[in-house]
Image (cartoon, rainbow, N blue to C red; front, side):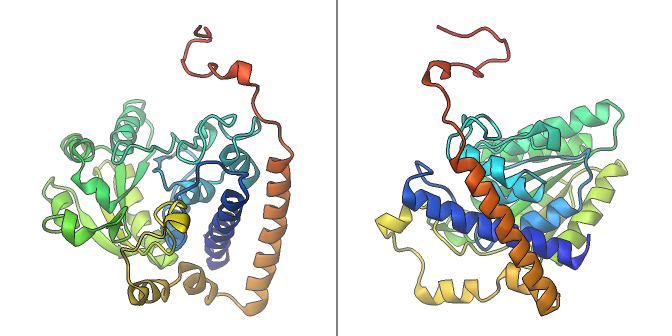
Length: 316
């Protein structure tokens, strides 16, 4: 993975999210989204360390994860718009994107719930004799959820090849970490007997380096690793805040948080010409992706009850 490849990923996520916010404002995306602006370096660095046989689970703020894993932005736009050509035929929307062909076992709107899914998937892959690893992303707020702590316990007890990635952006919705988490986030993970590290989540290359070590450890049968990636959410928790004008962060704090931009950090490692070429390329990609999504059909209301069960039987 080159510096240019990492830049391409963080820039793709940034511009995708900015355009998605525009589609929320225009009404093409109904219900809003949880923007990933400012956290792009984590998804880019983590997913760059994975192979095609690895799997991930994501969160309600998951567009960056699935894009970094290789999802077609055209189909992701279509999914956010509720179109039939979307990743999940418009049924999943912003918080439940999945693509099993890419090892994306799904985003999950239940805080902390995807950790147990990833742990179970990693255990199953190991039982099949494969050396695949699983990554589960979650926020700092999930550190107080019992489901995630149970996943820590089983992963450490059974030496499951899973990497727990905590995207610590400082807030669980509007509550500061200092008001919600007693002690240290990494100390909680270490208490289960797994190695835990705090990483600069704004630097994609540092995230890649740490994840590469964790994945190698998992493949070698040495069990789970916990990575706390410190970051800062540049935008709202949810686009609803753009209208509600909720105030819980000072202008000074936001300015300091935005001063370390993962897109700029990675972009400065490229020549101006190389960076401009990638920017232009991605604008064309996203123009085509948006056009594809806007031109796609909405699902037939008569099919609203399809795809609810593993059985092809349609409920009545």
